[in-house]
Image (cartoon, rainbow, N blue to C red; front, side):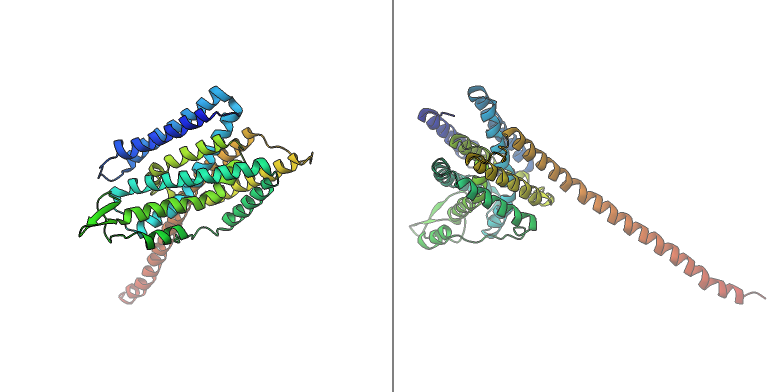
Length: 349
């Protein structure tokens, strides 16, 4: 897939325009809380933009590249759902006001997008120069999948990274927020508000998540342009997804199991691809349509299971409780009869 520098520049410019419009036009000075209804609307808008871009790839570059883009986008989107739990911890730890959370998340994602762009460039160059990097990426994804399957990340807590610790030490910061402002003046001094520190926390923490998501998408496509755009559209809609899944995310109890299967599958796909490149003929080169089917099918299965199985368990528990109450009532009734009978007998002449 050949992408000219002009197309690269126009794509990056379009992404920046979308983000700027979101921050400085649509939600500028908006102090309203981000309700579920608003989140659903803007999530649909961002998903629509992502789908429209994928259709454009299909029209100009063919169905193969479009399938690679959609596979990467769906994978990044699904992995981002698991990341939302850490974002919730960060916002709670810094006590970010509800009306400021949209601005914080959006700005943090801009930081993450820039840093991920560097990761993608380095990863693409490494894969182009060294085929053995596929083995490394594949092994890492399989190891990550094993950890998820065992539940090692279920109790993951937010920990300050080096960049955040440096920012807290170097940047003079106030103790209180000032609306959506990143800087304010106190006694004539220009100081940063906690809002800026939270943005650094969100952006730098998201980069840590890229350690497994970037190798995962490289398992679906090695085209840097598709990797970058899939990441960009997944990240841009992450803010709205955060508010939309604020309550639903805790109900997706089998999400980690599904993500573990997806990462493991892509890891094996990367290893097979590397073996195929080294001339091992028995190693299959898994087509993108099969990868996309596995990813979508897994996500649908874990979502349905997460939303239905707990309800069945609740119904079973409720049924057992009701049966226990009924048995207790019957037993109480029998016991009451036996206690009364002797008293009746003693009153007979």
